[in-house]
Image 1: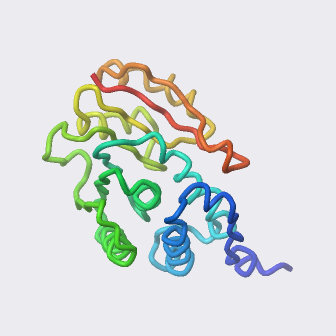
Image 2: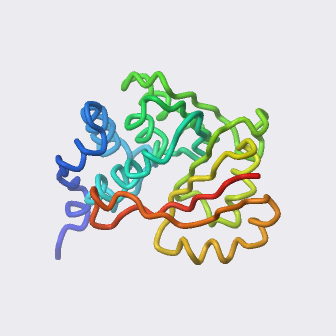
Length: 215
């Protein structure tokens, strides 16, 4: 019988050309972050044991593909292991990132990575999205693997100022999530709600993003 633990503990080889295209001169920071996540992610409850063989393609590059969509001051709700917040902060040093996370051990991890990688464009806020007390102050909010769109909209839309955006990383069911979130879309006055595909030049399976304007 095959040793499943051995098979699932092998990290995916780095797709060097894609990494350099996604991160440019900051590719080494992405390598350091990914190596740290591979070494400590499972033991610290950040990623599951099955994720190492697809860590670059399914996670790091999946997040980095969305980097060109952002500007200004952006919140990452439920930042967790830093996917997408830390990855995007590496890829876009010109954008200010606010990583919003409630779990202490995840906040500790995020703080360590920000310090080790020297990310001076990142602020970490330990709070639940629904307890955010800074009003509608962000230019955009993102999230990945947090919840279905109909549940995510009430957590994210109130953080964004009028005319700002939700830019949410989603999977293959993104269109169906939009249909199921019709009531929340109307309630929070979202417009231009659509699915965009990014990263076709980086990934075999590109990244799907739900975008919407907050009014």
